[in-house]
Length: 171
Image 1: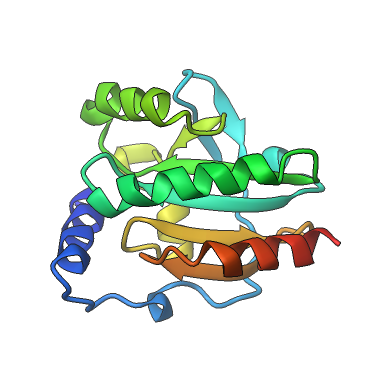
Image 2: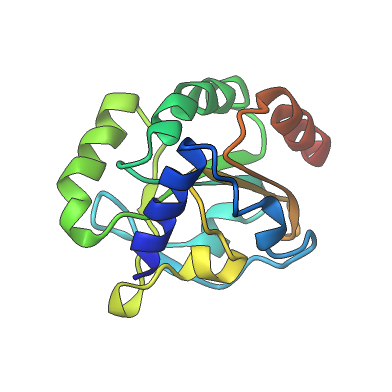
């Protein structure tokens, strides 16, 4: 049901019905949860280990979200421009397990940074999205080196602001 809600809200935003806003997200300063998630490569990843001593950019996306498809090239270029810094971008797919072939194809087609993760928990839950109250895709959250959320944007492509926040957190 949560997956349907994320996809449905993406469609509403595409149509210009902005019922969901950034205020739906948890407040800045929210600590990173201790969650293990499956990767597109069938390995299990600890979010805390991936982000240890790094600034993290968490990007929620869906195959069915046209805005995600438009946003990905810019996010990928941003990721490439920050390589070599104590930084990592983690993409979190919100689609159902049945969509895994399409999700893997999109990861490959776009060249998403690895590891590309599935926001998939018990009973088809979305543990990371539920923790941060993410309700639309794409949503981007920046987590500082101490594991606290310092920035969030929903359905925006403000890459300049995003890069400034990341660089500020790295220094």
